Length: 449
Image 1 (tube, helix red, strand yellow):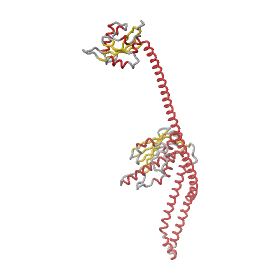
Image 2: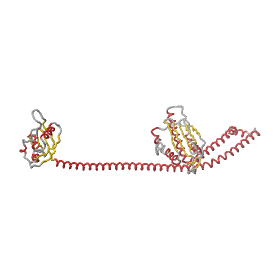
Image 3: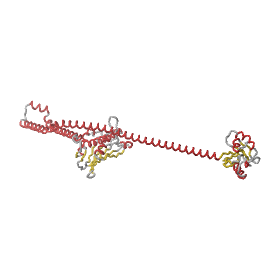
Image 4: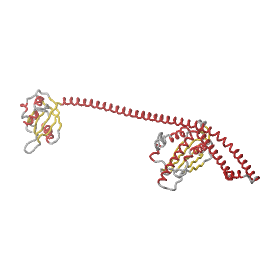
């Protein structure tokens, strides 16, 4: 850069600038520098830098040498001697424009700045920076507070949503349980009425069967006496004896009375099972024999225990010597009904698969075991060799309204209500273990009292 090019550039810049060579000769200056020292630019032309400052020539040369040998801007301090005799301490920034060569010395551009003003600007800048930092900190704190408030709000919303969902689930479950309880109450009343209406005539029939059989046997004996005393009866009587096949009638009527007695005894057992299962008069805590409840449940479900796909279900009962249990009998029977019915469903599904695969060896079984653990606890185990429970649904098994059955065949409340009856109503435990495709076992543990 030539002095003329420097002047063209420096003319539009407000900072005090001067162009010197590495020996300190002033090659060019701009008007702000002339104003700073109180001289005209023509008076500065051709002078040495050492003439305008209080620093020694060695210090000046050393500083200029540092500027000419560095690629970066070199900071320094120069004290100007103004034309009126005052001294002005300036901060200097030096940068090489043209490096030194064997043909010419280096050209160095110096920028001077009043240190007092620079310090004031620096202080002002620091103040502005501090203010800006405080403002940034305030905004950061406000953002953090807003973020925390949002987080708290989200947590509160999540908690509230969870609480509302839980309340909704409880209301739905309570509603369904009320419907189930109403159904069970209605069923109990109906069963009690039907059992009462059936029981009276059945007892009447059963009580009179003995007398009817006795009277019939007496009449048969009388006929035999007539045949012995009057072996040659009139032709009309002999023809009637052959027509009714008297010998067959005498043998078959005995079997007929036996069949009628078995049938009436069967009806009495069914009526007793229905009354035991519903236990309409035992809604409160009562000491009962739970084996009667299990047997009643099996009697009610007996129509489902017949052959399925040509495979009859075998019931294996291993009852322990249990004391009477203080419980809610009707509700406990409902648990037995739910679990045994589920076992039958699993066996039916397994039987269908076996039939489709044309397998011949399949023996569907339901094993019911009861044991006493100690003086305080008893267990009831219901196990089947059906299709088992898939791993992905095991965690949802006791959830309300969860079911794997088709629409219209299951409400998803059976095991959920059973869990509530055993755990919450009786203070017991209900658990299960299952192997997918092989078996399932439910274990109920309830206190004796």
